[in-house]
Length: 234
Image 1: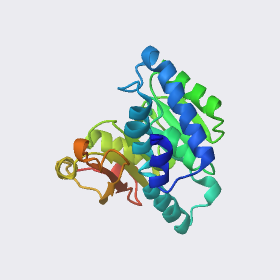
Image 2: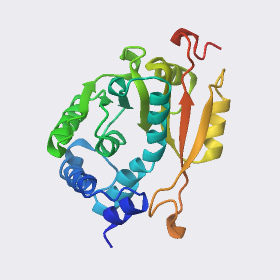
Image 3: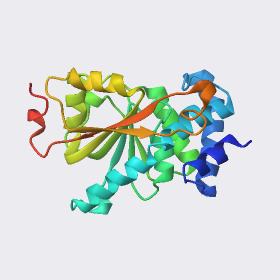
């Protein structure tokens, strides 16, 4: 079985151009993984399932958020998405390949990984991708419409405030997470709980495999239309 192509088809993303880019991305990860410690496996199918398909499982949610931003009056050509703490480029590179009409900023603090991300973008021909070597805490305020992150940090008070601060008014955080009960515990621990939604994700060969069943969710947090300094002030 061709896990990558079958998985993309199950996600409703059976696009030959996307499949070609993701195949090239997996092979690039394999080539550089030992040098940069990018992902926790070298196997082609494991990378395809646990990283590529997992990242793309959130594409439907991202598409809905983009539609909401446009419906709210944000000009399409002014929308900017970010992958915070991009690391190996997950979920930013798969999402950028899936949404070529929108610019993606991959934010990564480590020089060697930032260089790897630039190499990936060039190798895959992702003209909508740019890379910024920086920490989330040092990013300019009100910069992004949607900021996604995966395996980044727990949503505790300080980091949630930082992440909300880099969003434009009415923007969204999209966090890839695991078990629903742990998400609720994280959110309830915040001094002031922002408006959020937990959206279940289906990852082909991962969340529906009886032998290795996993739970994946996306937490969507809405940035209040107010001064960033007031966010989570409790």
